[in-house]
Length: 373
Image 1 (cartoon, rainbow, N blue to C red):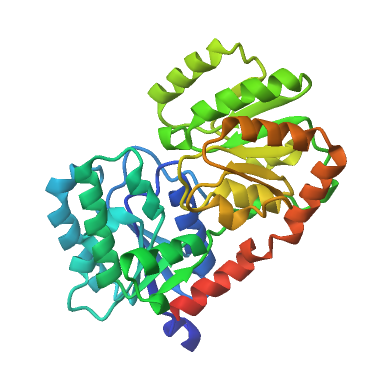
Image 2: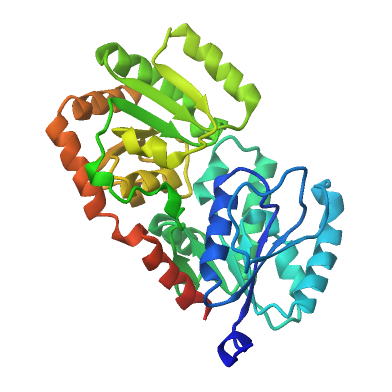
């Protein structure tokens, strides 16, 4: 071991598990892989589960599972705290990155009295507590936010909108809140995106979950596809099977043969290679990873202008459109307007590349390294 290796700081990213298919799991692994050149990197998971990790992990990243299976959180939380504290002490961890709210209050308690820098990495938007939540859930949400603001050294959020929310609504110190977009998988970015021949295809990509508001996609698609007979609309993602079955039944009411639920996206690069437009109808977004992926692949996007996420990624009228939530008629009109004009669609596509620098991995990684060193 040379001197540089010996002086590397040790970083632990703490997750529920990395063995699920999901956006947060994917970006946690992307970050771990990217930090190995500058740090000794560990991923600590509270449990393993029945499946193996579906994403590539650099061999230099060390994985630790505290338990084989997920237990009931209220019963397991004390055990998680003890296990986490013992492990971070034995590994001599310098910095902990708590990836999401599942790490609360485990990390602040487990690190009491230890010389460790605690970084909280927010993966939800603060406005999400106002949607489909009970009063009890709102209280818990606010309590967790209080812990984040008062018991973490640094807070990393995904957008400037969310940074302003933490400062103005939660009283966080502006010096301790940092906007760092998510890293993107290199293997979903087309190296020759500008040269691709786009098909008459609209896509939507994301986990099948109620907050993604796929009912709006069905109603908007009914309007768009009725007018644009030579276009198709494909939806990629898996998740809540019960919700998916309801969506398919709902779609059948409209007789939408050209709106197709394709299931899990096994090859995002191929999907992005021939799509002309991406549409997102989420009720809320902390970031909108698919919006960045589409931008970096030269695909214009149209999304509801919810509190955080789309407005930080889409340049309205330049590389896509932001639609008043949840004006489905306006969204359908904007989609038809854009795809009816090939030169305008191409101009929006070219603008995607021009406005994408801040979302490129090299620039994002520099922000992380500056924060952690």
